[in-house]
Image (cartoon, rainbow, N blue to C red):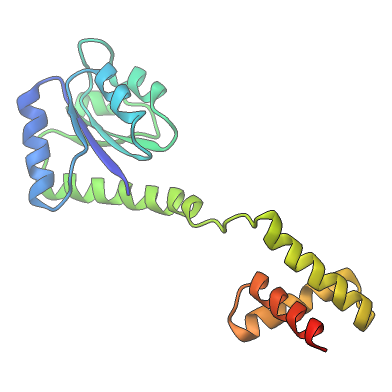
Length: 182
């Protein structure tokens, strides 16, 4: 899940933005008034969006953006003049900000981050050595008994796994059990 950090130099403004987001069901992870506070919060979170003002007492938005991890995006809130000189690659909203524009932008950034970093979490888990041994032994038995190549044996286990709706380790175990019972 993407985290939202509201980082504005004035605490009242940051609380106002947080309240708007909460009214629309978006929970903020933190409110910060300095760039160093933002960086401390960011390193405790996985991914998210930093809603930032243009300047803090310790750094400006460009410096902050340079230090943000790759898994965080910035949404800059500033005047139109500042936004015109803003570098490419930063999402931005001009003052005065409409609540719908703010919420829509934050939701869009969060959705992009979920697509980008959610895939990493759904990567298949690595097989243990024991699980890999079941598959290797089943391949070896199929190669010996049925004169298959290693690739053919692997594909056979894979196809049986898909046909029966079980994972490859369970299929390999079933093959080994059937061979032992003969």
